[in-house]
Length: 244
Image 1: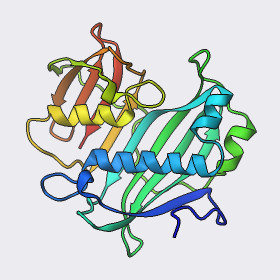
Image 2: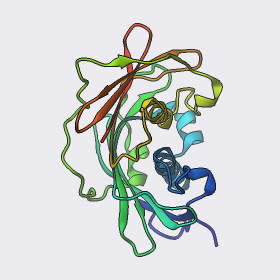
Image 3: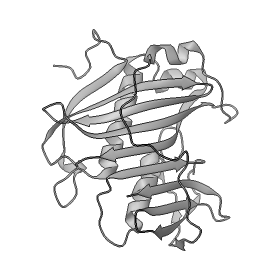
Image 4: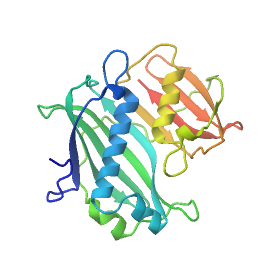
């Protein structure tokens, strides 16, 4: 049976899957990067099914670029657990869009949910551009999931401890020729002094690192949260990751 039923309404897109061995850590639970990758895959599948996927966008000289994650995880699913991954758009305004994601268990209960913000980019200029109806109408919009309130941006602490630099290699690059958004979260997790399974994740993506760039991480640990900045050698921030 195919994953994608083209006869159904694809504006709310969901597909069943099983937690793979490659997606779990040593405790046998799905890792945070695996959750983010599942969300990213789901939005890609939806765009392709709707006919507004990567090849179409490249022809249009457009791209949707992620600018913010807000992820809430009630529990991490376990190895071989059957789950459903879903997504839908909630709003389009100017050159920005908002999209929700979720993981459900076999009883239909939400076990993870997320809100994300995106910007429509002109690939020729690298600048934001207002999408046309042709770019947004196929997605439709739906009522957003219930998410905790959050500040507009992740607050960066005054003092952070720098860590060793990371040179961007080919394995970090995605189809937009940028460091993939999940890689920034992986870099942040690798800085933590002990293993953690965050329940809340917020990420601001400020600009894209590309092949050959040097990323300089810095870490601040507060009682209620951990913040990692990922910057260039001059201090310009690529991304800010908050874990709590």
